[in-house]
Length: 442
Image 1 (tube, helix red, strand yellow):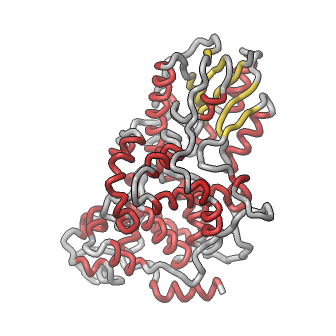
Image 2 (cartoon, rainbow, N blue to C red):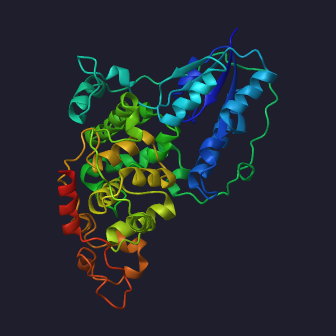
Image 3 (cartoon, one colour):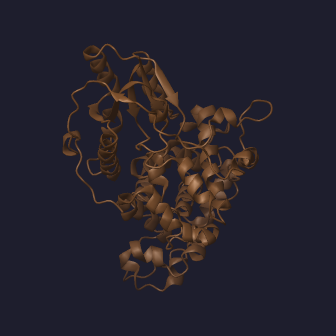
């Protein structure tokens, strides 16, 4: 009879759970608040509150089905060493896969202590099942997407069931540790993070008809808001697919899920792309730390950039098109390294996921797989005029602009010319910086 440690990580659920489906016999379910990940974070990081609440619910859900969850705080290697010293009878660890650089190094250390059995349930398909006919990975999205057409033709993807007759190893389970004991303070979370994934999707489904267009408008709540739940596994991507696929006009949304698969495949086959240009380009980025600080703080003098960054800083959220606009501005107008922006997003975004974030930043910087051509540079004023014509989003964040005529928000330096506003002049000229960036790329 096997004795397993079932290690929950980015799969904080009991439904469609691979680790609970393939665990056998006697188990010790655990979760670790990893000091390696938590130590660099500020004590008011909203993600930690969200994860803490989710782990608390997971513990209760496991108790409801006759199991439990032991929650640790520390370094994974130390925790496993302690467990193996006290309980020498464990045969293996059961967990889900993860492919970012830290996860790989972490798992290598644990596997040196105890065999690991990994299951794949954070994405729809394992990257090894998406290769070309010559067994090489796709580097362009469209053929990758077409390769997934058999999956697209499915009406329902099998969801895992909890294995029968699982038993808890004899263990003195502790009560849930406090948020304060791991060095964080409870934060107020946006409404959708207080809801279940199923509830969020139920509210989104009526918007599917308009999703392809509405998702681009900053002031509209036209997106699914499911990304954070997906990132931490409160709902599986298979469950999202199955719920959405039942409805008409779901094609475009499913396609977006496949972008997520594409970027995961890129990270899996090209792990160096997490830190280096995917394309072999030796780009001499500028190193202007003052410009980077102003970008981070939302004080660039470009209203749509400032509103987007200040919104990110206060809420941990940013609309997808805004992510593209601020990334283009950083890499193509300020000509600063995409890694700087990627790392800042990693610190701030509630739904931060390494594969998608790195892939999207390299797309914007024209250094990644299937990235935007280097000569395509988003004009932030054109973008705000098109997708926030009345300035609803900009004014909702930059309160001092509430009485400004909307068209002035979309005109370069129109606000800095108003002596009553005290709004800064843009830190770069859009046209000039665009031309310079294109020349540098050439």
